[in-house]
Length: 88
Image (cartoon, rainbow, N blue to C red; front, side):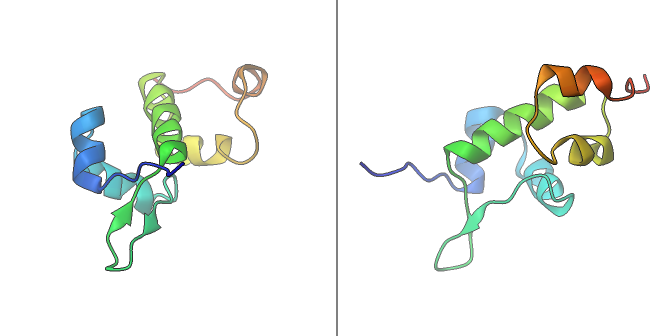
């Protein structure tokens, strides 16, 4: 069984998140795609799950810095409720 690998363009098309935003999330140390032999980003299913968490937390009002802090360790509802409320 092989894992489906997505390029940045394929992930952008599948999720509606522009490639520029995906690169920004990577620069913010939130996404960690592998690199293919030619140096291109290669996204796996785990990266899609991570992107989903990032988008959910952004929609809830968290900054990228706050999301990075929350991303250390397991992300669960209790931990979110214990964290300071996002600024609106």
